[in-house]
Amino acid sequence: MSKTTPKRILILLGHPSSDSFCAALAEAYAESARAQGHAVRELRLGQLDFDPVLHEGYRQVQPLEPDLLAAQEAIRWAEHLVFAYPIWWGGAPALLKGFVDRVFLPGYAFKYRPGKAFPAQLLTGRTAQLLVAMDTPPWYFRWIYRMPGIHQLRKTTLEFCGVKPVRVASFGPLIDSTEAQRQRWLAQAQRLARRP
Image (cartoon, rainbow, N blue to C red):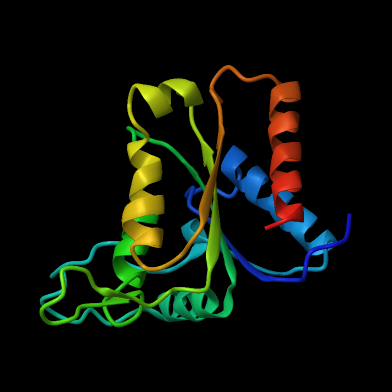
């Protein structure tokens, strides 16, 4: 089997802690992607300096901090986006939601069009992978809860802005997992990075 064409990959750690299983998933993916010859950049949201609150919505322009300007540039650079984050209370952590609120702005990620029901998608040409850790069994999160914390990022953020396809890998339940299970999940993240 031949190697894939090298891609520009941006990995975003949506867990506030760099000492988390989500961080380990992100690192496993990054190491494997680099080993395949891909160009990889990483953003650890917990290390960025920014206000996660969009104070006035879209009614006023809220100047972007330098870290968010750099994040926008990194997203523009990337061909493939990888988000590693946990499910907390059914959704993404507040830090990741705040990052999306501040970065995926009109004029950058999408553009309103007069008389059109849906805005123009400004992030087309990119694909994405979600690495999602949870304490809920993934089958239960999918069929009973209907995956709100995945749909929010996949459908109503990334696909809304033109990023397609968005693939999802769920890992859990994490809370009672063994070291052997975690190693298998990290190996799965490595395999996913081989063909982004």
